[in-house]
Every structure is written in C-alpha cells, then in structure tokens.
Image (cartoon, rainbow, N blue to C red; front, side):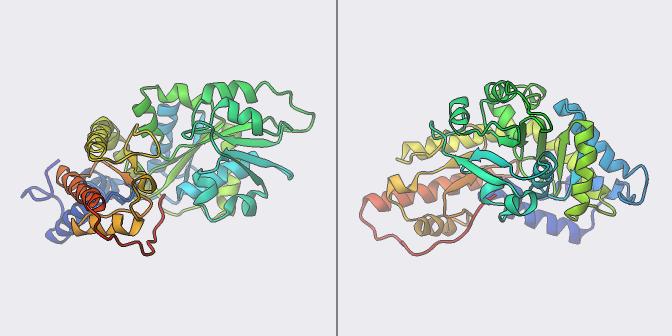
Length: 372
C-alpha cells in the first residue's frame, strides 16, 4: 500500500495530516499501547468494510463474522462474539459463567477486572472478589489458588499464569448436583504479547480456559472493540448479556474490519517491540533503575520507591523531553513507538537519576493518572 505521503495515497491531504500528527504523538507516548492510531491498511479496511446491522440482520455483519472466525482459528476456541470494549467483554464472560448468588471470583489483587472496571463485578454479577497477593510477587501459581479457593462449584478464577496446573486442579473438584463446575476465564487483553513473549502456542494456552476476552485496542492497536471466546452454548448465552449491557451495535463492521487488519499487521511486529523494550530496560538498569516486575514483553515497571524518586518528578522530567508517561511508572511500548522517543525517554530518566544522586530537589507534589 502507498505511504501516507506518496502521490498514490488514497487519502486526502487533510486526512494525511491528521494521521501523521496522531502517529507522531503516539510514537512518544508510553502510557499504554491503546494510544496507537490506525495505519493506512486499517483506514482502507474501514472504507471497504461491510455495513450490515448486527442486530436486525439475521446473519449479522460479514466483517464482524470474519473477525470472530479469525480469532476462533487463532485460539482454537469453538465460538466468538464481538463486544464493544475489553471491560464489557470481561463482564459479559463473568456474568455468563455466574448463574445465581452466592458466588465469588478468585483473582490477582492487581487484576484489571478488579481495579479498573469501575466496580462492575459486584454490580453486574453480584459476585464477591477473593483477591490474592501472589507469593512470588509476579503472578498467581497453583499454591496461591489452593490456599484461597472456595471449592463449592460456583466460582470463577482469573489466573495470570501457571494455567495448566491451575486448570487441572480446579477441574479435579466434583461438581455438586445442580451446580456448574468452576470456570476459568482469561482476561486476554494482551494475550498475543504474552504468548509471543513466553514462546508458547496460543491454542495450547487457550485450551486451559473456559472463556477468553481479547481487547482489540491493546497490543494490536485496533481503534476499539473486544472479542470473547468460549464454547458455543456459552457464546449463545453471552449474547443475552451483551444486549443487557448495551453491547448490541448497528454497523460494527467498520471497527471489526480495522481490528482484523490490525491482527495481521501488528502481531508479526511484536518480537521487535519486545526487543526494543528489553533494550530500553537494560539501558535504564545500567544507570541504576530497578523494576517491580520482570521485563518480559512490552512493559517496563520502574520501582520509583526504591530509587526514592517522586512520581511527580518522573512525569516532569519525561515531559521536558516531550515524552508522555503515567506517574505510576509503567512504560508501555507498541508498534508505533519510535527509536527517537526511546532515546528521549532514556535521556530524561538518566538525567532524573543523576539529579537525584546529586541532591537536586525534586518535585514531590501530587501526580495523577491511571492506566489500563
């Protein structure tokens, strides 16, 4: 496809200017991988997408069906369903699994569904959250689950790792008459980063879960949307809860087509993004920074507390280099992150560490901003 600036570009100068400006801004934004903007292929796919009504048309929308089919193929799950967002996808899955209270969800205390979905779990599913602090400080293990699970046949687990051991364990429980077995749900917001970073097959990993929610705006960089996956009866039931939560959409084909294009474009680039991330981490470690979690994929979590650096100063020094960050010091790399921006980031943080060591007074005021 011709580049945005080539004479053969199908886009008007106004569109070209907007996309180039947005792409440049995204290239130096380390707050999240949701900041990416559509590439030329995505914009073209939007123009070529089907525009069927996904509610009224009996067969749904062809572009949505193509996206769902592609993710079924990639994961090996039976069926898929388009949702508007990652939060909605997670909540649909949980509500579909959980039939009637009392029930609970066991999860890592840092899980997105617990911390960043506006308290939806108890409101929508009437479920309590059993939060667990992983003993290894990184992810849940079978040992963590065994100590905290309530094995009454009416719970859902959201493990972040050790999927095989946890899956075998929870499936070993007898199911009381009239109850459903314990279900395992994967918040797969960045599942492609995860499996590529770990070097495992997505189908093999997905096989341990009863449902998966894949956010399309994170990682692969689609404009919006999520796809949930599970067995066919599960997906049929999930359609009811999607409607309940306002997830039925009229012409979702344009966004689905963009997501399908993003899948094909972004995933092959993940190894280079991971390499860029690890290289930046090594440079930061060399000047004295430490991390709260291992650098495995496209994220660096700096330990500002150990460095005695105030979050406000962290944001301030990065802003001086025209780099966007959140105060909790999570740095997220993506397929539009530029080498120039990485150099600016390292320069800013090197200067910050040097000033800290030289006794320069750093801004320790309030700093606001969350992440997803």
